[in-house]
Length: 278
Image (cartoon, rainbow, N blue to C red):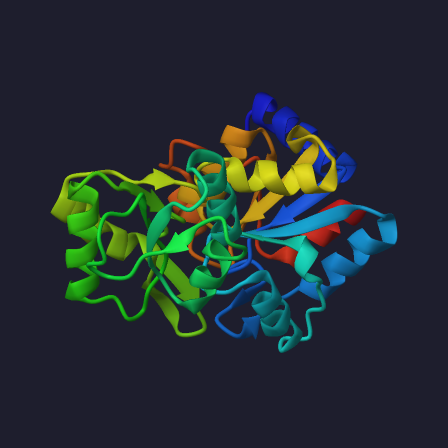
């Protein structure tokens, strides 16, 4: 390690220890599927004890914040819904800021995404083949069909905006990586020739929203994730300190050739806690 890189590492460790807030990715950081990962409860407890705010910010739009509370409770991770920011809730906010009230939206996703997009009465739900729509919104849909592809293609070709909650091509589970939201979005992109507007990571909106909720500058937060192409890129774009844990998608050897490097790399959350406490 060069003197410069040693100096940078020391500086980044200092930023970690002086951070005013933390933002955690969920899949691959807190758990895989329904299996909790090491150090979650201990790190959360340490942050609580020190009065350091934290949020969970996930690209996964399949569950609502309240459903995530229940999922986490099943793994003995206690959290409240107000501490969870999903790409689904962020997408609804984005649409409400950029579309007029009453706009019709065609959603491809699971029930949790529908609940998040149509929370309140600002947006109107459009069904397959049901006239013109203002936007097509896509999240992970494990029942994706040709009929949905056809409907999305028709709407986008007829002028609807194409909005993606996230572009994660894979999803870490307890049985390994499975196809993610980006894999089905690729089909719509190929059919329409259109690239989506992306709300979730690697854009910085989720981190910025989470930091704003905690009333902390995003530059004084730590963003902990497991994916280079989403979590780490989003941290760089937003200005948060980027921390990579090796419990999810990315292996250590992949970091070398990736153009955006994490500020710090740890094996798991236990190692993050050790660094925070030393």
